[in-house]
Image (cartoon, rainbow, N blue to C red; front, side, top):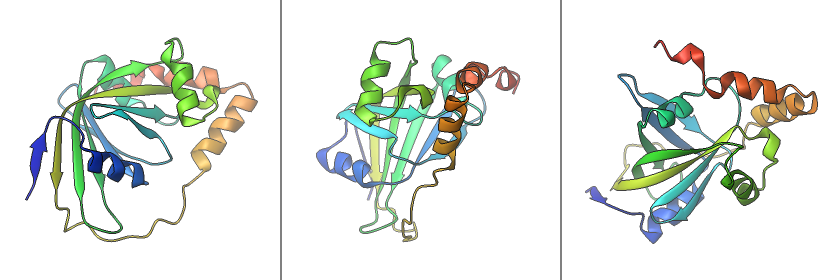
Length: 176
């Protein structure tokens, strides 16, 4: 049986830390953007705040939805061990390279600042847990490193900043 509450419990925090994959859904209009997220890209700051580290890459709908005061849902589900699904409903604050927290969060993740696009602080207003018994068991093999390698190569060739600027506020998504 599922339940809803206002803040993360200690068991939710431990569950989140153990996951290799989560889903990030956002919307500030009629469409809902849904993306799987990997790497070691999420941190729990406290029982009502998460931080997500975003690498440059394809479109940046999460940024657009945060700028437009959109709604966010993060979903963590167990692929190994005991079945579980944790949904986190929240609002986002964008932390870009001009924000004083950017360096602090880069250090928190141990990531090179220049290859991070931005961070999102997620301010939780509700948490739901449910059984997840229909989610299949699967084995984690490894992270795909191609995105990080691409970002490091672009940075080394001094092309990453131009790319981040171009896709920071994606004009190609404004007319959707």
